[in-house]
Image (cartoon, rainbow, N blue to C red; front, side, top):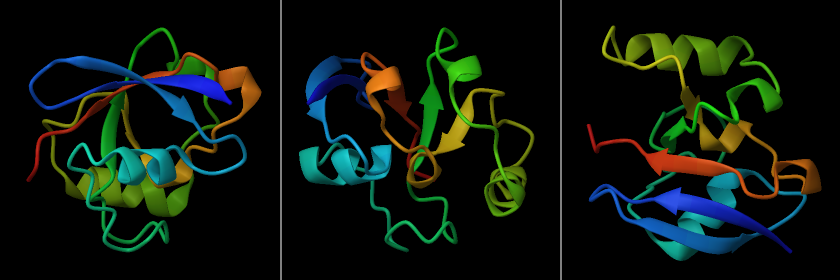
Length: 105
């Protein structure tokens, strides 16, 4: 397994073992840092919203239609590093990825 660094809503970093071959959301749900992921990864709710550390943004696959639309619905306060963790597959190339859990909205 490869490490995933999660920053909780209090700003504390937690290195955890990410599960290769599944979305970042799956790991976030398992470690229970407040990511609801209500839709179960179907990209229809935005309750798995995270901020990707800027050093990693360019390494991720680009946002696709549904994800882009849901993030736009969050409003103008959404940083450019916002992603829905259900749309980020965790691979060996992303070992060390750092994401911050977005505030509960």
